[in-house]
Image (cartoon, rainbow, N blue to C red; front, top):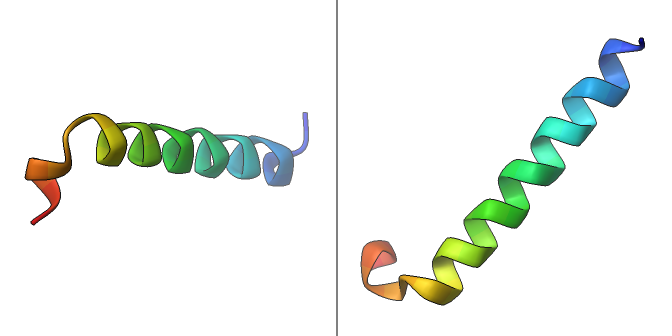
Length: 30
């Protein structure tokens, strides 16, 4: 297990969740 891959995966998932929330709940990101 390489910590670099774990961090990259977490960042990628976080960005995807952020983009999904921005699309579904744009009123949260005024």
